[in-house]
Length: 364
Image (cartoon, rainbow, N blue to C red; front, side, top):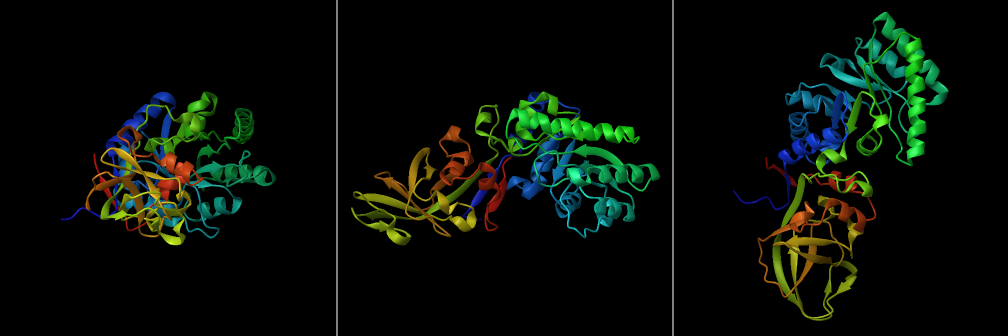
């Protein structure tokens, strides 16, 4: 069988070791690893199994479909899903023991009607996204407490998400969180799982760990911010393609659409079979580099849908040679964070943007 033309090599052992390391850096009663968006592009099942092997006690996803996929492939660990359609049907999720992050009174009532599942109450403490906001918070908490008291659902957790704007802003959000917890206690509800810190906050702010921390991007060996690039984590993904053509250019020859690059001197270029349809950001045109045989070379010309062109100078390369697009910089490959810088975005955007014609290969 031939090597897939475009491939993502994912190291499950790297994810496992990263989770072990993160549990050392940010210990808590429980550790959730988030595998939404197909495991941040790494493969949800692979990531979930590796995370659990590394000591995670919970798995997090965005929506119920993602949670049910994990159940379908045999993941039996606690799974939390927290982003739902306005008219979400919770029946199957409850039947398959998916814990539901709930943000509205309407969804609380829908969960109760669907059979009384287990919920984590999601509140907006200042991020301004999902979660019950201040104008509805009292009604939300009161309704949750009443349904818990009546046995129509079980309030097992309270959750939020910090903005990461500043230490002061994050700690101010924590005060809102604690007040909500105190309000629930006054109503006779004491959730077991309290969590609001994701990768960066869990590492930086011990006071925000409460009873559970959530790790997303860091579990995959990528830094949540530029200040977290030296944590002893290893990137779990290597995105590769292959050279499909090699040619010699004369000085002045143009490459790719609009000739945004022309050869300043005679040189060799290699055509690589991957483009923006595969997740290589077009915005990185004019900035990006790739790795061939342990050396870096610039991507030249406009990044196209299916292919990029690499200036290798006078190096000897051949069709079929492997090309590292992003991966572990210790072996000379650009990192996903570098690609994020080149495209004026973040590493999350890079690894989750991989196209559906790229083959994922588990390398334990």
